Length: 329
Image 1: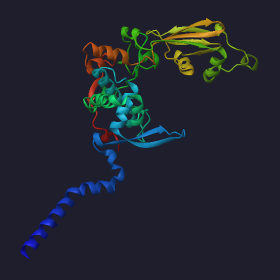
Image 2 (image 1 turned 180 degrees about the vertical axis):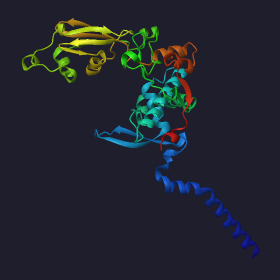
Image 3 (image 1 turned 60 degrees about the horizontal axis):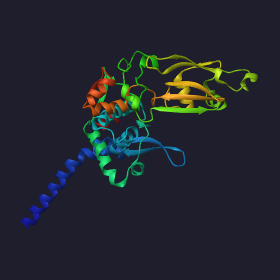
Image 4 (image 1 turned 30 degrees about the vertical axis):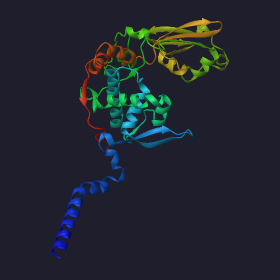
């Protein structure tokens, strides 16, 4: 009887202790709902991501933070790049994601990424583990690190390669708020993969694709097909990208022309080619911020991720941005 009583007392005490330990969690679940797993540590956190389903409809899904982050990194930079370049890219990506979470009231991220199935298609089976671990290492070794300028997240754009120089934010964005986004010499980019592209485009096709920003003309001229004389590059920025051009009666930017025609770069030249327009571009991407090609070349030379980032975003600081759960309220 005495032993049974003691066993019951011990059992009761243990049950009470378990309840006491779990009480904060139970209270939190009632207060925050069953989705509080999103608030967990980085290793177990989930984020809300907007993506396009197979039927073409957009939907919001909860994705593990690690899977999402590595999926974005894998999409944006080749896994074959040097570790320090991957770490620099990881800090840039984290800065952009944290900035988006702070600015979006719905806390939904819209950056596209490669999910597990996408990575399986991208990598051979025998390389999957090696590549995944390499990207995870870049993520882990830069854990919680972001780039700050003064007292807030820095604007940290990146591109595959420049035309030999990165661009100035003051010229591209028309703002002096980002002095760290200045022209940087990137001579290594001249040897980058896919550095030069040549497009031969039908004038009618160009007119159709640029229609959204072309000035309105009368019905008679609207039926007129463009010719080479309707295209004129008027200005380049200090990095050699087209900043101002004329299409017929319209004055537009090189970036508008690039986006409308899906060109690789707005550093381009124009030539007439047997009744069509020949466009030759140099570089790949908008040319603003970090050149991934040069970042990788710097890593090959022994530069670390901090040196790489300071080269492209001089004046910013690597800061502890906290774990992802602190960004989701």
